[in-house]
Length: 95
Image 1: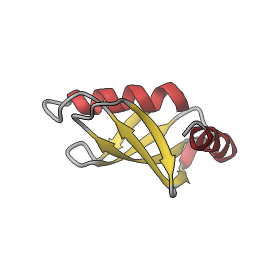
Image 2: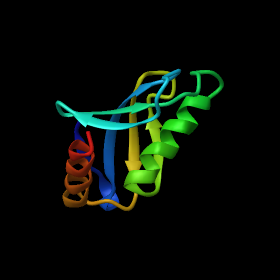
Image 3: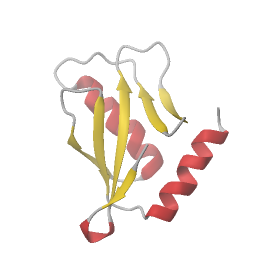
Image 4: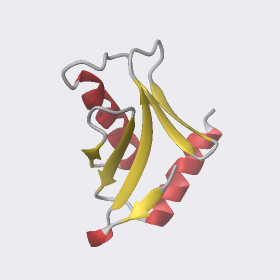
């Protein structure tokens, strides 16, 4: 998972999404942030669910690319690189 800085102090977060999953949640392992959601990849349902999961951890987030792909990029408006690192470490420890 790469968190990249962007103009205005926001962070871009890359996520691999899995729709139609039996379990929901975020997992950070092997440098990849994975989001599993129960919703199908139909009419934006999975995108909305993934956005809700990611926003629950990282604060206000907007999907900026990957609308029809499993690989998605979110803009986290309230995070710094240091905070992102701490949040990812806490996700990793919850496994």
